[in-house]
Image 1 (cartoon, helix red, strand yellow):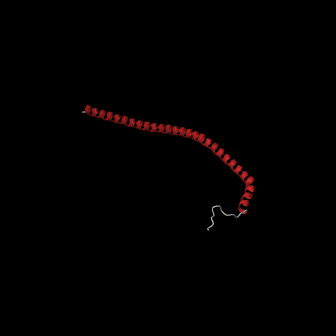
Image 2 (cartoon, helix red, strand yellow):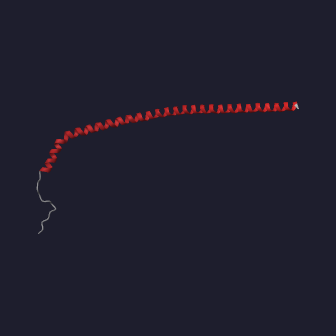
Length: 118
C-alpha cells in the first residue's frame, strides 16, 4: 500500500510540477505579448513621427513657394494700384474739363429724324 501511495504522491507532484510549468509558460507568454505590443507601439510612434516630419518638410516647401507667390502677387497689386493712382491724378484735370465742356456747352438743334407734320 505504501508503494501505491508513493506512486500517487509522485503523480500528484508530477501533476503539480506540470501545472507550475504551464503557469510559468503562460506568464512568459503574457510578458512576451506585452513586450511585443510595447515594441510595436514604439515602432508605430517612431514611424508616425518620421512621416509627420516628412509631411511638415513638404508642407513647408509648398507653403514657402506659395508664400513667395503671395508676396509677388501682393507686390504686383501694389504696383498696379500705384500706376492707376498716378494715372488718375495726371489725367483728372483734363478729363474734368472735357466732361464739363460736354455737359455745359449745349447747342440746341433739330434732330435729323424730326419731320414736320404738313
